[in-house]
Image (cartoon, rainbow, N blue to C red; front, side):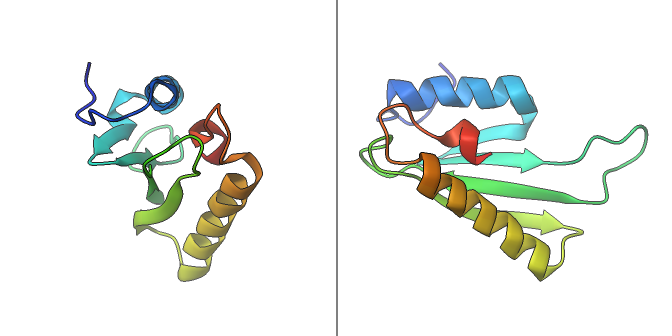
Length: 108
């Protein structure tokens, strides 16, 4: 396994594999109890001018306890864009979090 978090739940492991399938292995990273997902729009050729890294902090008891969502890094987004992204992610946690199935894919 590529997961350094010994106490990751099987549900979280499955969700992380799903996130990797959706966003690509290179876009999903595990660090401590956090899942970092790098988001960039797909561009034909050249470099994306906008990007954000969303951190999903998995508390003890996840998935029964919802994750905390923060934006770790962003490029090309104004503060209002970062705030909107954070608010949307937190709303998804409120709607889908704290369940037995987990909510990482719905939040992303």
